[in-house]
Length: 272
Image (cartoon, rainbow, N blue to C red; front, side):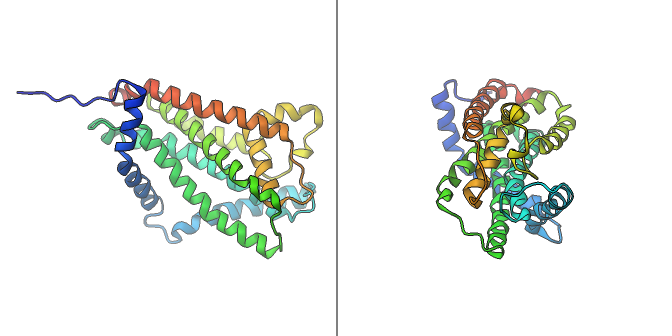
């Protein structure tokens, strides 16, 4: 009786070749996650818009009406929504990709394929939600007669940054959750805490100058500020030092996330 053992490529080049060979599995998993997410829901993909709109309304009342935070000459709902969308993308990607390996344990334990496909497909699902929500943002900008300036040329940069940060954090959480199931309780707390220390409902300019550097250590500060600045422009201020810090931290997050994921990937089937 002949025993056939299927294992991953021993070199990085072979691994990434495997990733290309299994690209159809990536498409299938991403499409499956999109279908399952809103299955048997009344509103369906409408939740992609309802969630940020409800959060926008609450933060507008708390920070704009009650807190009297400055808006930089921009309608406060627009200010909040431009901060809410990249943050919601990040938080959704972390939650979805973090649980992706455990949710697909039956598939992982039976056949070989690059496991990074599963975590990445979950991030793509969250990115589709993000793009749907962007449609509402465009409609709101039209409602308020806001026309983007040449700053819009920088918009793809900040989309790339938030996507890379989401993927990097997702790879870290996904790999850690396989071995340490406690992370399923920790992740919601991290997401909730991150909302309060990110400029989602306010501008970074309200933070005192002596705390700006400490505040900018959160990579989402530079990303959210840049996201707003590229879309709304006007009197909105952007700290390029925060953007530079976000770029460096994002490169580190995705690089270290891939490194740790690859380091632990060979043990997933044994411990999951």
